View 1 (spheres, rainbow, N blue to C red):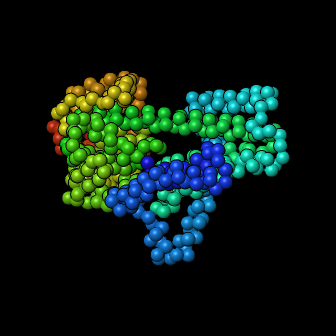
View 2: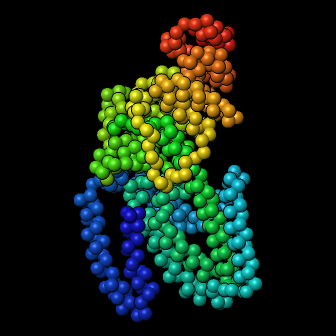
View 3: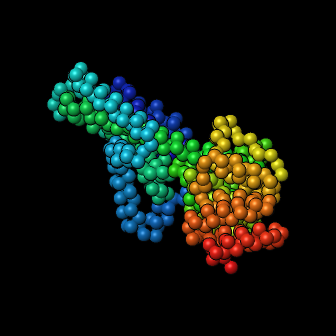
Length: 496
């Protein structure tokens, strides 16, 4: 992994600590043993710089361009980045768990319990070790402690300085928040060595307490991280199960467009892989069949962002290539606890419950006919098992699929089962397929009741409900019950 590439230059320093020789001979031995690896390092560096353009194209050395244009400004920027990132990822990282602990009041019950258990264990260990008077360093003067700490501090400082250059050259931010926290990975070795060096500088009565508290806080922070990842995984599982319930198959070349994915540690790039695994499990080629795009992340897809038809959509994932078109777009919306929805480009053109950009793209590009409705539901990979219990979202997804198939009897049957659960929609648009099902089976009073329930949530739903009734009036035969229900609706909602 390129993040750790420069850390190989630490090899001579590590060998110096391991060799028993002294003085200049020690350095010579360390350099001699490192020479084969240095030759390999140079060879890989030349290949990476001149014969592997993909990564350079995606992560260009912006600092070199800046140095050529404004040398003093660029040097100042780099020095500031080196200082800030080294302090942040080399030292402050050990205190970052204190900041994470301030999030405990909003954490889930399991995360809260596990974190408190980890802190209690750390404090218990501190008490036990204190009683046993365990010491990491002997009670000696500062000069002896400095002699013991100096190699660790030197190794840690060198490790931190080498770790940051892949990101300083490409001007990528080093932060603790996702997705940039991955850039702190190569700093781990240097940060650990710095911690050991600092601990060895402390008087004999303090290292134990300092180290135990640091490790206890780190354990608590990792417990919180595991809870965050667990919640993200559950949301992702629900996303793909609901997708499988609603979308039995997709035409190859489909681009799924979403906005504001409710995930912290997964992006549209991450989700494109299981999307293809589910809907194209037998595709062994380097041509990807499907792509998932989050409008909040992929700003470079200008044709998708602007809703321009007849434009190519191409993404090179190195291992595979996707080629599609803005004429092959399916717009989905997912914000739990609401269900995953296939956005209706006609009914929801001004549905203010949708993000503005997603609404704009849906009205111009979304093509629900990209869904192949005549095929059976796909099988999800085993790691998505087990299938969630069939609650409201299951019956909604199945009803919306039956609506697209124009199987109105099935829609009504699913409606009766769903409403008997005692559950309710978390988005008023989830009532739309049931309104259509009741209307097409002549149950106009039930269609009116569901329409008024959807419209009462907010005035922003009035336009959606009115356009749905315009569709119903076009597609259903005239009857006294229909006219009566329509008149009752117009008395409650200002429909034309």
